Structure formats: C-alpha cells, structure tokens
Length: 335
Image 1 (cartoon, rainbow, N blue to C red):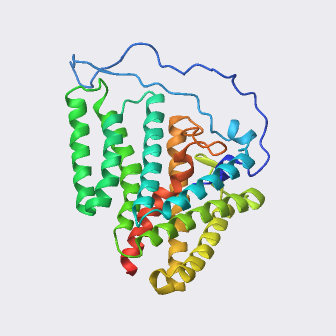
Image 2: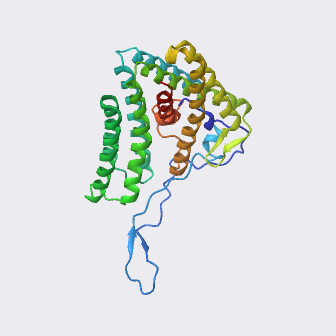
Image 3: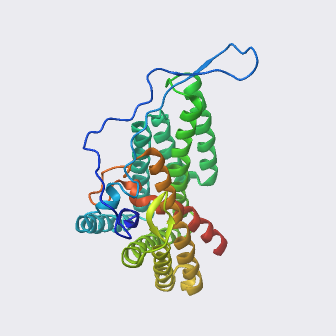
C-alpha cells in the first residue's frame, strides 16, 4: 500500500536492450504433454494441459530497474484517495468504513484473478469474487462464525466447480488458485470488517492499522531510496532493502505512538500504541514481499492499472492485507 520501494532502483543498474512492445507470449510446444508412468510394462498415459507463461518483466534488469514511478502523479492520486477514504470514515457509524474496505478488497480480488487468467491459469473467478464479497459481508453481519462457513462453502464449491466441469481445466491448479485468491484477499481483508464490529473502538483500531501501514510504506520508500544498500530478497524484490524496511518500521512505531496517545483508543496508552506500530511495521513488509513473490512467478510488474502512478489496487494494498489480521488479534489481546 502506497509503497514504491520495490520499483525504485537502490543502486545504478546496467542498461539492457528490452524486447519491443507486443512481444508474444512464450508458449510451450503445441498439444498436450504425454506422461508415461514409471514401472515395468506400464501402458497407460495421461495428459496435462499446457500453461502459458509470460516473459518476466520485473527482474533486476527489467523495466522496473531502469524506470521509476511517476511520483508526482502517485502523490496526487494517493492524496485524492486519502480524502475519499476520510470522507467514508465520517459516514454513519461503521457502514462507511465497511464500504471503503469492501470496495478495496473486491477490486484487489478482481485484479488478482485477472492476473491468474492472463498467465494461462483457470481459476473459478466468479466463485472467487462471490466468496470474497460473502466474507466481507458475513464478517460484518455475523462475525467469525460466518467467516468459517463461507470458507467451507468456498472450498466445497471450488471442488464441485471442476468436478462438474464448469471450467475445463486441471482441478489442482484451478482449486489452488481459486482458494489462494479467496484466502489471500477475501479472508485477510475480512479482518477489517471484523474490527468494525469487535467493540466500541473498532473503527479507530481499523484507522490505526491503516495509518501505521501507510507510515510503514512511506518510511520504507524514503529511507530505501536515499540510504538503501542491503537487499533483503534480491530474487523476489531486488530493490527492497534492509535499511528501507527499518525506516518503515521506525515510522510505523512513531505513528503508532502518536495514534495511541491522541486517539483515545485503549485509554490513550502509549504502550499499546507502541505495540500497534511495532506489529504493523513488522508484518506490512511481509505482505509487500509476498505479493512480489506471486508477481515474480506470474511474470508481471503490476497487478493492474487502476491507480495512475501506483499500478493496481493490490499493488498498493498488499501490505494492508497482512496488517489487518495482525491488528485484529493484537486488539483482542489488549482489550
């Protein structure tokens, strides 16, 4: 969320000749691959449908290393979205924040399933999107029991989806990608809705999680850009550095302290504000790196283009997906 560190070079990169626009997909040999089981006298064979792959565009010598984001446009879009989010937080008691979180989660889920499809995978997209919305509504209306029920129905439904051949695809990859989207985006996002109905301070706890996540991303960007030297995971996100991560952690802790003192949550406790900033500052980079891992495997630079200067919603809210459940369980332990 609002993190550009992985897209900005931390050190000079060599200039390479990039393939021209419109480079065709790298296709495996046409036709199914024949697999012969091991064993003496084995005669039966099975076929495996080929999966399309794209040439990777986010490697250290790719476009992300030679060009950065349009930071001016990104700042304008980020400020506009922040104003819109602030407006929704003022509507009603909890319905405004729920609409905000649910809207973001649904766009993120749409982008993720779309990225799966562009990579040649065949998830049950309709089932996945429906399940993500059901998780958000169920968490808000009925709490944890509804979340458990939706997950069970989503898994059974995804199995039936391929058993009944609603989609002609490999069941293992289909069910796996469908459930990955539901759990990663829908389940983790539903903790934002659970916070809203978890007590009188629920809306403020959600706001604290958002502010600390934004602080973590901004701190990581600033420190990583000017002082980043030591890479954390060069094969996954070559421009994510130890220095930037520590900078994001420190700013998240600072914002948590200020929020804990000024918001009135947890009786204005500095200690609890410190815990909030610390927990979010630790898990937010994990969400960022996890999304980079999936993008690297899919061979894409961004999950979408909905936010000019940022990429897609999932590119900007990946850290938040990890911060929401962490904040929820922290609040449970404190309250």
